Length: 155
Figure 1 (cartoon, rainbow, N blue to C red):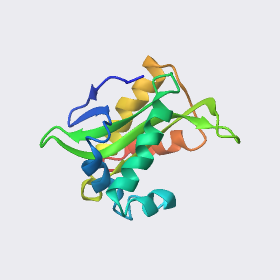
Figure 2 (cartoon, one colour):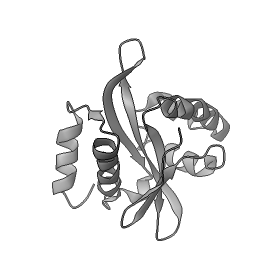
Figure 3 (spheres, rainbow, N blue to C red):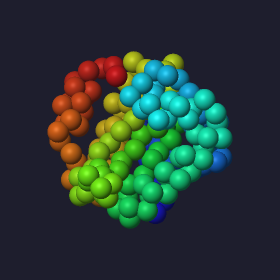
Protein backbone atom coordinates (compact mmCIF):
# COMPACT_ATOMS: atom_id res chain seq x y z
CA UNK A 1 0.00 0.00 0.00
CA UNK A 2 1.68 3.20 -1.18
CA UNK A 3 0.67 6.15 0.97
CA UNK A 4 0.08 9.71 0.00
CA UNK A 5 2.52 12.56 -0.33
CA UNK A 6 2.18 15.18 2.42
CA UNK A 7 3.46 18.72 2.80
CA UNK A 8 4.44 21.17 5.50
CA UNK A 9 5.78 24.71 5.25
CA UNK A 10 9.30 23.65 4.26
CA UNK A 11 8.98 19.96 3.42
CA UNK A 12 7.41 17.49 1.03
CA UNK A 13 7.07 14.01 2.52
CA UNK A 14 6.71 11.38 -0.19
CA UNK A 15 7.16 7.61 -0.09
CA UNK A 16 10.71 6.47 -0.81
CA UNK A 17 11.17 5.12 -4.33
CA UNK A 18 14.01 2.63 -4.45
CA UNK A 19 16.17 2.16 -6.45
CA UNK A 20 15.45 5.61 -7.98
CA UNK A 21 16.27 7.40 -4.69
CA UNK A 22 19.26 5.24 -3.74
CA UNK A 23 21.88 8.03 -4.10
CA UNK A 24 19.95 10.33 -1.77
CA UNK A 25 19.29 7.44 0.59
CA UNK A 26 22.99 6.62 0.67
CA UNK A 27 23.90 10.27 1.26
CA UNK A 28 21.82 10.27 4.46
CA UNK A 29 22.87 6.90 5.86
CA UNK A 30 26.59 6.93 5.05
CA UNK A 31 27.19 9.44 7.86
CA UNK A 32 28.21 7.59 11.05
CA UNK A 33 26.59 10.26 13.24
CA UNK A 34 23.24 9.60 11.55
CA UNK A 35 23.63 5.83 12.01
CA UNK A 36 25.16 5.99 15.50
CA UNK A 37 22.35 3.87 16.99
CA UNK A 38 21.99 1.72 13.85
CA UNK A 39 25.10 -0.50 13.76
CA UNK A 40 23.74 -2.83 11.05
CA UNK A 41 22.92 0.11 8.78
CA UNK A 42 26.32 1.67 9.49
CA UNK A 43 27.94 -1.55 8.22
CA UNK A 44 25.81 -1.57 5.06
CA UNK A 45 26.25 2.16 4.42
CA UNK A 46 29.81 1.73 3.18
CA UNK A 47 28.42 0.45 -0.13
CA UNK A 48 25.48 2.01 -1.99
CA UNK A 49 24.34 -1.28 -3.55
CA UNK A 50 24.34 -3.18 -0.23
CA UNK A 51 22.34 -0.43 1.43
CA UNK A 52 19.89 -0.31 -1.49
CA UNK A 53 19.45 -4.10 -1.46
CA UNK A 54 18.75 -4.12 2.29
CA UNK A 55 16.16 -1.34 2.16
CA UNK A 56 14.59 -2.62 -1.06
CA UNK A 57 13.58 -5.67 1.02
CA UNK A 58 12.74 -3.70 4.19
CA UNK A 59 10.51 -1.11 2.51
CA UNK A 60 7.85 -3.55 1.19
CA UNK A 61 7.75 -5.20 4.64
CA UNK A 62 6.70 -1.88 6.15
CA UNK A 63 4.23 -1.08 3.37
CA UNK A 64 2.72 -4.57 3.42
CA UNK A 65 1.54 -4.12 7.00
CA UNK A 66 -1.62 -2.87 5.24
CA UNK A 67 -2.37 -0.12 7.72
CA UNK A 68 -0.88 2.98 6.09
CA UNK A 69 2.61 2.45 7.52
CA UNK A 70 5.33 3.78 5.26
CA UNK A 71 8.74 5.34 5.00
CA UNK A 72 8.84 8.84 3.52
CA UNK A 73 11.64 10.83 1.96
CA UNK A 74 11.84 14.32 3.45
CA UNK A 75 12.35 16.81 0.62
CA UNK A 76 13.40 20.41 1.20
CA UNK A 77 10.87 22.50 -0.76
CA UNK A 78 13.48 25.25 -1.20
CA UNK A 79 15.91 23.19 -3.30
CA UNK A 80 13.96 19.95 -4.00
CA UNK A 81 16.69 17.83 -2.33
CA UNK A 82 16.01 14.77 -0.21
CA UNK A 83 17.33 15.66 3.23
CA UNK A 84 16.00 12.92 5.46
CA UNK A 85 13.72 10.03 6.16
CA UNK A 86 10.72 9.56 8.43
CA UNK A 87 8.86 6.32 9.15
CA UNK A 88 5.56 5.25 10.67
CA UNK A 89 5.43 1.53 11.39
CA UNK A 90 4.04 -1.04 13.79
CA UNK A 91 6.37 -2.10 16.58
CA UNK A 92 7.32 -5.78 16.42
CA UNK A 93 6.61 -8.29 19.18
CA UNK A 94 9.26 -10.66 20.56
CA UNK A 95 8.91 -12.84 17.45
CA UNK A 96 9.15 -9.99 14.94
CA UNK A 97 5.43 -9.81 14.13
CA UNK A 98 3.71 -6.40 14.08
CA UNK A 99 1.82 -5.35 17.21
CA UNK A 100 -1.04 -2.82 17.34
CA UNK A 101 1.42 -0.21 18.68
CA UNK A 102 3.05 2.13 16.17
CA UNK A 103 6.19 4.22 16.27
CA UNK A 104 7.57 7.20 14.40
CA UNK A 105 11.27 7.28 13.59
CA UNK A 106 13.48 9.63 11.64
CA UNK A 107 16.93 10.24 10.22
CA UNK A 108 18.19 13.52 8.86
CA UNK A 109 21.24 14.46 6.82
CA UNK A 110 23.83 15.85 9.21
CA UNK A 111 24.03 19.24 7.46
CA UNK A 112 20.31 19.81 8.25
CA UNK A 113 20.47 19.10 11.99
CA UNK A 114 19.32 21.82 14.39
CA UNK A 115 17.01 23.61 11.96
CA UNK A 116 13.61 22.26 13.07
CA UNK A 117 13.05 19.90 10.13
CA UNK A 118 12.40 16.83 12.30
CA UNK A 119 9.87 18.72 14.40
CA UNK A 120 8.08 19.84 11.25
CA UNK A 121 8.02 16.37 9.67
CA UNK A 122 7.06 14.63 12.94
CA UNK A 123 4.02 16.90 13.36
CA UNK A 124 2.77 15.90 9.89
CA UNK A 125 3.33 12.17 10.46
CA UNK A 126 1.94 12.31 14.00
CA UNK A 127 -1.26 13.91 12.69
CA UNK A 128 -1.46 11.39 9.86
CA UNK A 129 -0.95 8.48 12.27
CA UNK A 130 -3.31 9.63 15.01
CA UNK A 131 -6.10 11.26 13.00
CA UNK A 132 -6.10 9.69 9.54
CA UNK A 133 -5.02 6.16 10.45
CA UNK A 134 -6.11 6.21 14.10
CA UNK A 135 -2.90 4.43 15.10
CA UNK A 136 -2.15 3.48 18.65
CA UNK A 137 1.23 5.13 19.12
CA UNK A 138 3.70 3.76 21.64
CA UNK A 139 4.00 6.35 24.37
CA UNK A 140 6.88 4.83 26.31
CA UNK A 141 9.46 6.99 24.54
CA UNK A 142 7.58 8.81 21.80
CA UNK A 143 5.48 11.31 23.75
CA UNK A 144 8.37 12.80 25.82
CA UNK A 145 10.39 13.23 22.62
CA UNK A 146 7.53 14.80 20.67
CA UNK A 147 6.62 17.13 23.53
CA UNK A 148 10.25 18.21 23.86
CA UNK A 149 10.43 18.85 20.12
CA UNK A 150 7.21 20.88 20.10
CA UNK A 151 8.40 23.20 22.84
CA UNK A 152 11.88 23.55 21.35
CA UNK A 153 12.44 25.81 18.33
CA UNK A 154 15.29 23.58 17.11
CA UNK A 155 15.74 19.80 16.71
